Length: 304
Image (cartoon, rainbow, N blue to C red; front, side, top):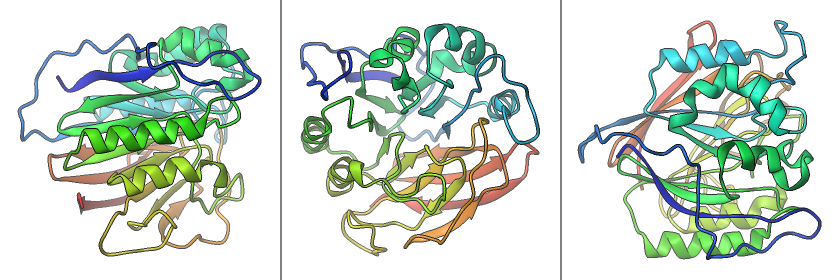
């Protein structure tokens, strides 16, 4: 199965960060894909966040390009889509998902692996997101030979200490050659919009120290790729390290890139687009493609 349901856990209401019950095991309901992959297959994945405008907001060259990015993603014929939060503005209400997300990015609902962003939590307990996708805050999926960790980085709404402990335990219990972590808030970012997010340091450290090879985030509405960096954000050639991407170019708007953070290797704040990934059993390739069909950044990295 290209995209299969793993372990998922759910969240309750707002207020203090919610503890997650291990007995509430569920994930996105749409996970019934036919098995078309062999053990050596490269799986094609599209990743992006910060996507759909409020249903009544006008499309311009600088805003609300969700239809263009959805059409681009469809042209790439992905096996799976990793949606990096702030999927539906402004508050992620179910009615907004039904009127905004469904006509554009809803075409991928049967192959999607989403994470919630801060805008989803503008609805009580992210109820619109949870109602639409039927997912808890964090869970695991298997995509080809890769183990994919879908995290909730809204640490004011979920217990990120507990989540980091769960992540560390799962990585130790399920060792794999290649793994990826996806969450909305980037631990490292050069954007002037939000920038590096220290509140997710525990999640980032647990992921990198646990052996994750690839990190995906959104939140900042631009594209940025980092060299393999360790848990402290240092560029390293050996030991635990992850290649880190910020891909907040799904359509809502664009932010400016500021002074480059340590390890930043490529960035653009001028293009809506998506990150196309090829996940093989021992490596991954990437290509950032804009809505004009141009490849702005590409490369290959072995899993460590």
